[in-house]
Length: 259
Ligand code: KIV
Ligand code: NA
Image (cartoon, rainbow, N blue to C red; front, side):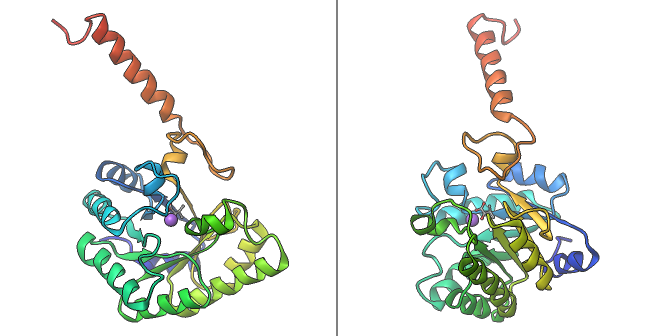
């Protein structure tokens, strides 16, 4: 049985940290699921990490669904969440319902994530939840607003930190089962985590969140630029380069294949 949103809320009550990562295809989803990750997010970072776009903005709903279907085939245990791409939910409630509905029906994901919180987005979340669609919120640095925010840390002034706090509370009241806190001061994330009943999942938001998420390709050392808060647990760029160079030398020297 896959992990449910309700089980993540129970983990917070039990004080067990939630382990989350991104996945974009079948083979990586299978590896991450077997390694015991609780929540696999098909993030719209897909657009940058795997499809090579400059930002997350160009990613389409069809591209997202194509990859999410592959991820689904690789997961047995983890809770599967899919990001709603830029401008597939902001236009109207109908648009949000249509996009989230397509994701659940066509990919088999259990939940969707969308960026922002207050007040229009919270109302969208409320309607999705009423329709039976579990929603993961996302506040702080929201990369779909890169042209307004850049990739800078958010919530550094009293005004912005107050706004982010209120957005997180509004998302909980709207029925979100958890909230991603991206690139905000650790102290603010700690306050939000203490106030909310639902879990917070941090990325660049300090150790006091109820769980952590990273972009898998950053953790594995497959990306050129990693955000300051990411930690590289492996250097697959190096491993892959060495393996491919060894193969190239073997082919050129006629050592592979064997006679
Ligand atoms: O798209 C993504 O990878 C995300 C996570 C970093 C939270 O939204
Ligand atoms: Na995202």
